[in-house]
Length: 281
Ligand code: RP5
Image 1 (cartoon, rainbow, N blue to C red):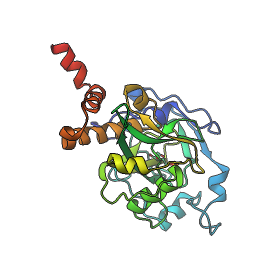
Image 2 (image 1 turned 135 degrees about the vertical axis):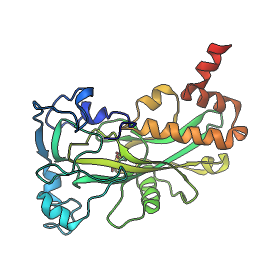
Image 3 (image 1 turned 90 degrees about the vertical axis):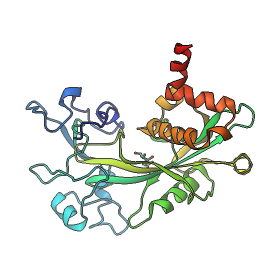
Image 4 (image 1 turned 30 degrees about the vertical axis):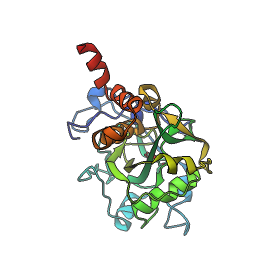
């Protein structure tokens, strides 16, 4: 595990209801390089993953359960660098132990790639920055309307497709700015299968935002312009709050003079600068 990376938390502490309980992994035992002889996580693969094995189901989206066949079918790669394998030939989560072995609800051994379109606007009344967020059906948490990259699909196409499918809006994302590429601290992650994403940010001009009429798609139970503050960011799904912070930081640096004063203060507050400034004065 790279030492400058934050410890994954949701991948150790949260889990979808069909998962077995996670073996408790204390902070100092997360890295694979640390000895943890008592570590005996449950092995779990969901029925839906087995039913969607591409070698048995032509419409499937999952690797075969035999990891050796999966590796022959598909070179396992990751944005996080070289993938390490355990003695059974299973890829190891680059951020360390999660308390569950197998793929659980994730289809691919190793990295499962997603794309996350971050779309923000200034609220015309409050002058505060908001993101277009969906409420996930699987756990009710608010999230970026992202999704899995289909086999052979370009990330730019996934961003557009997912935004359309989940938020009901056709939006050109070609001029969006990449703010993050790498591991996601997702509650579905396991020791052998994990989420990675490319998060791209587009800040909408007010006339374009006003024309949009978002509607929740199949995987979402609601869609809304979510005001951003420390609390809403902390409660977003997986590591989406961290991606939003990166997007806001970039926006502040590039377009500060174009943002209303209310939005500038809001970003400073989120990034912690505002508190420091208030302390100094
Ligand atoms: C997260 O899961 C990614 O950041 C992305 O938002 C999402 C993709 O999974 P589904 O929404 O398709 O379940 O890790």
